[in-house]
Length: 150
Image (cartoon, rainbow, N blue to C red; front, side, top):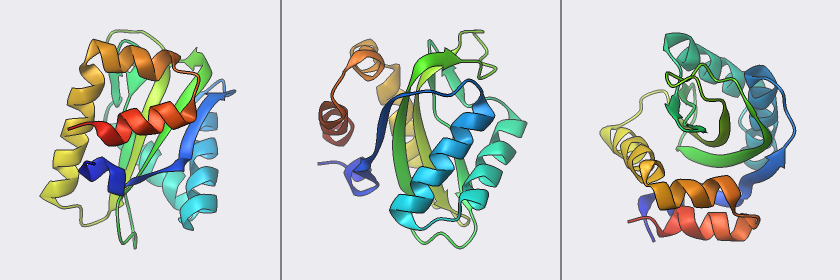
């Protein structure tokens, strides 16, 4: 088990979600974090939008890691969303995004949070892992992959 396993729960994994814009995606994600962790949806939307305003969190090849700092959040939380149809995420490679790892961290994020974010980005960049995230039909298998990363 890795550090990511402490931050993601199976109910934070959503597959084949139907949204057509980044804004609709952020609303969906915000409702999930509010329902599953009590984080106010408006805080989630605001932090994700503020981070995207600085530059796209898309890594390229259909993958993005939207993340942000949330006021009054006590611990970090991670979610995974795969979309039914890719959406424009203003990626540097101009490819639309289909799979997203979302990370919310406390406002006073620590180096450990940044290290986890870097590890997620590194692992997602692996072609085998990326293909699994883009195609695996089982949320349980996605959860196992995410929590098994070393």
